[in-house]
Structure formats: C-alpha cells, structure tokens
Length: 199
Image (tube, rainbow, N blue to C red):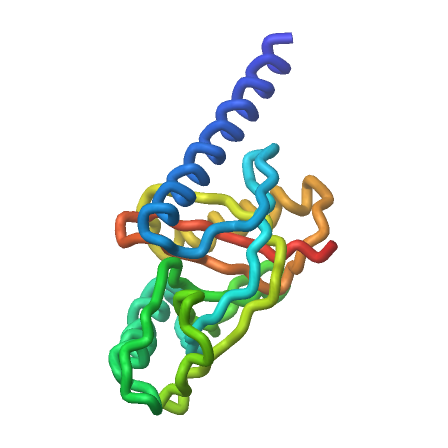
C-alpha cells in the first residue's frame, strides 16, 4: 500500500512540475510575443500542444555536441536577420530557437536543422544571401512536449531526449520516432523537447 501511495505521489509531483514549467514557457511567450500553442492538453508529465503555421529561417549543422552545433550556427540566422538577405533589410525574429534532431535506432545522429522563428507579421520573408540558410514554413502540427527550466549540457540533452522517447513509448503514444525538436526560449535554460504527434 505504501508503495502505491509513493508511486502516485511521485507521478502527481512530476505532473505538477511539468505543468509549472509549461506555465513558465507560456508566461515568457506572452511577455516576449513568441510562438504560443493554439491548443494544449495538460494531463501527464508531458503536454500535447498544437501549433499553427509558422515561418522560420534554418540551416544544417553537424557535430557530436548538439549545443555547440546550435550555438555556432545561430550566427548565420542572426546575420540573415540583420540585412543578410536579398532585400537588405532587418527581418524580425522571435523565440524559440533551437534544432531539429534526428534519431536512428534511438541514437541521436550528428546532423541537426538549426532554426529560429520569423515573427508572424512578416509576409513573404526575403531570401537569404547565404546559400546554406533557407526559409521554411511549418504547417499546423501537434507535438508532445516536455518543458525544462534549467540549463543542460550535451550529455543531459541526450539523456532527456532518450527518457522522453521512452515515456512516450511506454504510454503507447503515436509519434514520429525519427526526429525530435529542442526549442530554447532564453539563455537561462527555459526550453522544451518535442516529438511530433502522428495521429
């Protein structure tokens, strides 16, 4: 009986912590005017969030350390924003920024798609001057997400992605097992890990 009580208590506190971290992300986005979900289901130690169309600027990155790959390639995206485009103008960007990672047999691969969002008020963003940078359009999509509010290193990112993947599999959730997204909202560790829902 004590074991059941402890298990239920741990699950309750994990769910409560996940909702608190998501609330931190939503509060941040309301203050910073960044991408917010159009719908949310908050009933586990992770969340189901629906996002609308979004424009982004992105580039490919390679490396064993995902954090280093993202950090070193963000400058290309910021250069695009600061007149590094065919219009020679400033293109406003918005949080989050991050990377789409790829999984093979549950192992994170050493290629990433680094991105940041273009604010929705920009219609027809100009093409980048850098041929390694491209404009992307994200269609409406549902994600399973788990939020964090502390800084993590590359090893912890791998561990968190693997743990979240296992939790979704344990719950028999329908999701894309070959890609994941890491989205950062600030440099203090406010971030989300997401897997795309497939149903």
